[in-house]
Length: 577
Image (cartoon, rainbow, N blue to C red; front, side, top):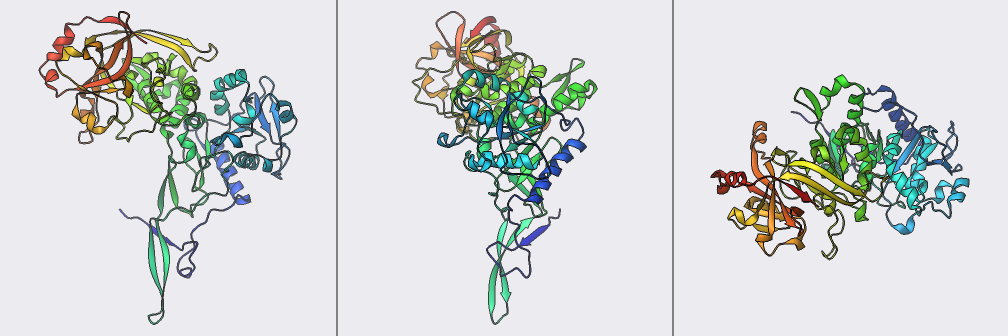
């Protein structure tokens, strides 16, 4: 295998300029860049087939948009701007902005007090926060008149308006023609144009110049023709709210630290500053982005279900692999940060709404049709799952000191503040009988829940019946996982003092990933999985406090003692709160 290498002269060095070209520097936004972006958008809209990218459509305008003025040949960067209220059913082409708010002191928002002023006229772009000004500039150069920005298009001190617009988020991003992603900007005041950095070199090499009598030295960069860039560390991709903004959008114009690139289901366009090299982007959630868009295409063409990677053939029909898709969504989403802990469900509501025609009935962050499979969630740093190894995820929100009560329901990932992962159950031994969820607002079926109870047909066994004394841990280390008989608690302050008050609810056999095994061996169970539950005081009513895996090689399993013990226990209707 051969690899092409390039030499280039660093920007700060002139000594080697006779032999190698200068490093391609990021350029300011100009007519050439403007044309590049517009042609990339047109190419996607006209040439990409329907099962890869959404077709061009004039979507219904959101309740409010920024009106940037009529589209013409001449682009006036400081032309008049006003907030426009659309009429029912009004359709037009518009862009959306995905960005980090940052410091609240630098926000420029629409409120009840300034709504009329904004409807009349907003300040010129150069007086607005830099990220908003840059987005306005890009929108105008794309030839679009309308732009949706949450801070300005939602009345921020009107709770009714906020709730209704959050509920509409799925359609707002879906109906846009493109989302401008300010991924490199940590706040609205930072901006994203003109801040790109040169692509990093693989190595810096000394270069001998001059003559033998008068030698001089220079420096050259060594780079490969293929460059991979990960945008996972960009500020935008650390925030939970922006996850659904990216997933729901038909295509994304991403402005990251090194370049700008258009991302759609079909391909990525070359970066502006790549110097002719191929640049690959590792974009978090990209496969989910592609899966969701292809779901809609296969819905249009029923005969194409077999082409979608998320559909499996079972019992003579194609079925959506809801478990796998939602497990991937939660894996990506829960690792991101939120300012307000109670926003966990609202920040995911748009994706849930989009998936509901395929996934079924939604309840407190899980789907009834795959509920039992998803109950086995645990701290993201606990081990390896079929998609490979992962590292400990950052806390989603501040954990606090444990003095505040745990959010409800305990059986849902919504109740914990950290990243979660879910391993598949090969043989579920529990059945969902009923799910009763009380919403905070009946108009938001994918939003916050006040309480939720599931009724399971399951077997519950006392910890003391195992004749072993497992450790209780909360740290989620790999070492704890390898010990085998460690019950992992959802919160550190929940460590029980008396085992006889703790019960185990049997979920079934779990699959575990081992890189040393081939694909066929992944279908064999490696552990029996139980929820660690604590009685609420009422008969057959429990709250989850953790998860417990009993390895297949454990003597209790190998000897058949576990199965014998479980066989003696009758299934009952268990209420999990």
